[in-house]
Image (cartoon, rainbow, N blue to C red):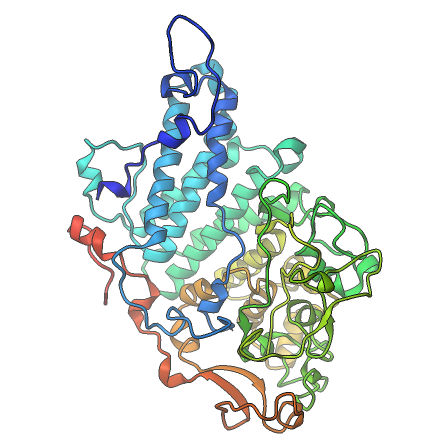
Length: 566
């Protein structure tokens, strides 16, 4: 059990950094650095804090664990609820390692001289930010978790072998940590160029908004008995501070990139990676990123997998702002690309369009050469079971130039803050004004040329405002790993996840008549859509709203009572 918390700093404080020691008669080893010799300057605290940035999330396929995407082959045991309680859990283990490391630095800040403390305030804030992020991730996954607020050693058996702390108390701790960090951190504009990527005041505010929204909606829809509006207010206030800070702006370069501006935002590099020759320094939308550099730590190459599902494809509105079942603009399914016509431009930015050309990093012939931008590339020929299971392939985040890449992963961006604001206002009040819609979701619609959302439009077309706000969130944050957690906090997973996972419409379309696909055999529903996983294989019991505590931890500490149903 002690391994949950007790982690030695051997690698950091010995030869890995290869600092040189001053030559003196104390005969200290010259190829290592003792703990007593470290933490004597602001640079030492900065170097130690650098490791925290590896905690940040990066490119992932988490949406394949939900209803809007699935792995390139097979099925997700999380999505269909067939997974079992594990002996060990990587999230649990890594998180308590992070808690130890951040608490260790906070202890060193507390022990520093007053003169040094004035120089290391930001590193105190960074440690608090990452400790808050870690506990938020733990609560999202497990609910109640042991809360450790100080650096532990082996004598702290009452804590090491202690019980789980109620989630409301842990979330209160997280928000307090972030409040402290917000007061200590610099604005983005005050961060030196050499330090870009470090935590800013805006990043801490944004995480506070994310945490407050998640827990407010959990309280509301899971009927915990705790007041959700206090946290909705907290989220709204954090969003407003970001809006009024003047530090961030949505990326909109349609004037030089056309409708592809949205897609190119996600693959900005430090070299030309788009028709306008813009780099990642030419945007102000990202609030916090996982930084990459092709010469130091290159960004991973992003492929077409996982496969978007029919449900995700149907989420995209038609150009008139109406869902496909209500719009006269919907092109139907007769041709393989019919349904992409007259849709929200984000659909063609996020998905590969059948029989249209795209570029990738996989082979030299497929690289984009901006000296001859129309050359090369490949056609998306809807190759089932290699590029796609469902017939749909994602294009979001997929780089087009030769690797290695320097594309940053957006951990938090301004678009999410607009969505948090809209949802928080609506759920707090049961309504949202047109002015607040213009301040939030309509900013996202405007930047892709979609009509705005208004109360009159919702009423006139028999829509539901909550559903439209949630639709906007799902579309805008597609493949950024939010969907499964959103379904859990809205308590709609029990309705959405047991539904079959479907793909393209096959019967009566070009897919069924063109020799490229007509000989393929699929299970299909009554309307001719292919079924990749039927409802009979999918479920979502109530216990799955929380993940199970790893069983080894419960064996070692019987006070860690398992989550209900596991």
